[in-house]
Amino acid sequence: MGVTLSDPMLHLLERWRNDPNGTYRSWFLWEQRIKNFRSIRRGIQQVVADIEAGTFGNAYRGSSLETVVHAIAEQRQIFKGADHAFLWKPKLRIPDIYESPDNQRAFGRLLDTCVCCDTEPQILAAIREIDAKAIKGLGPAAANLLYFLHPTLVPPFNTAIVNGYNTLLGAKVKLGRWDQFLAMRQGILGLNARYRSLLSNDLGALAGLLFDISTGRYPAPPRQDDDAALRAWEADLARVREPITKPPKKPNDDPREGDHSHTEIQGWLRNLGLAVGYDVWVAANDRNRPFNDGKLGDGCLDALPVRAAAPGADAVRLIDVLWLDKSSGQIVAAYEVEHTTSIYSGIVRMLDLALGTDAHALEGLFLVAPDDREKEVRAQLQRPAFSRVADLKVRYLPYGELLVNREAIARFGQGMKPIQAISRLL
Image 1 (cartoon, one colour):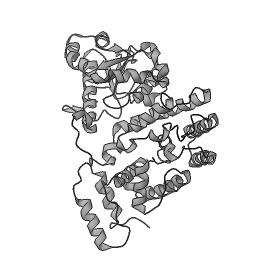
Image 2 (tube, rainbow, N blue to C red):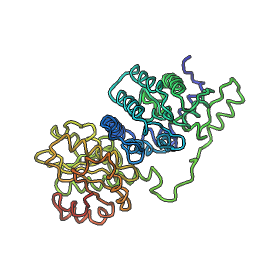
Image 3 (cartoon, rainbow, N blue to C red):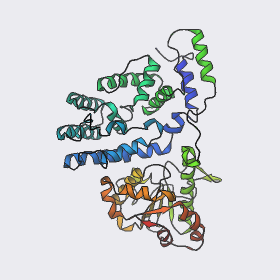
Image 4 (cartoon, helix red, strand yellow):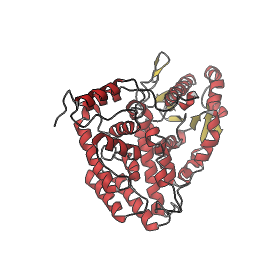
């Protein structure tokens, strides 16, 4: 049956899409979400490599899996608690991928297959293969990893999304079983196809709606043909919905404020790079963001030089700010601004840059973060997954040093020495 103007789902979707506090605008359209896809893929590849090499270990804490799941969990509230399914529960001996080498290798094969394949039958076959192993405690929560590999074929998965699906469609999907997940996936694909014009090829959009229905932010349309129930539902939908969480006590606790601060720091680095004599590149998906009286990309390169856009170019174009030598077009410095999120995705983009271009031209790789995050940044870099980073000589550049020194550097400085002087080697 096709969509009609009287279809209640249309009212729901239109209202939801325009809600600044709903998942569509606060998460699905969030620029950082797209940036993280490649870095999470790279992290999954590291998990596979560790399992194949026999170096994964027998604990979640400190493993490459913890690093990548932590990056997923920081994808705002929809993925909050993504690591619960992977935490080792010794009394239950689950999930049994830490103490059973055979199960661990089976898990690695699932991830490796889904990293390498690109078709629906291959993905479904890999899921059915892991399901047949009946690994204790390893259920469809692993689909969150697969979503970041194949967002058009695998929906995200958590308790809230399942509850939202059951509420919306009157289904009875149960947690913890792959066959139940696959049945829900089929229903999501059908629903997504029917309302594609208001959703996306990326199944994360519909998963976000299901999440909002589950949390009570939006009511599900009545399924029965009842005019009174429909009118009551429409009245409820028409009410202005306030955030269901308490307002943040600090500006930095608000994701929207965090994004604003992120843009401001990018603007400082842009202006500083131009002032000290470099060409500047601003991340491809940030360049049109408003900044001061113009856009963040004003005065910057419209395209990366061919030499800079080498292997790993897709990731390099998403680095927050690059400084390039005017004559050679080589990248001299790279800056990743990590306001509140994990440093993981920034590090992966820097690895792509350092390993895929003329590394000898690089004079600095900088993690730019609030002053009070230095301890956290150093702790993150000690993770086994970042063992290759030590040779890159990444530096920590605190906001406070930029705030205090940027005007003097712009006025009197030249080249990289002033920035190196106010940053610290990690």
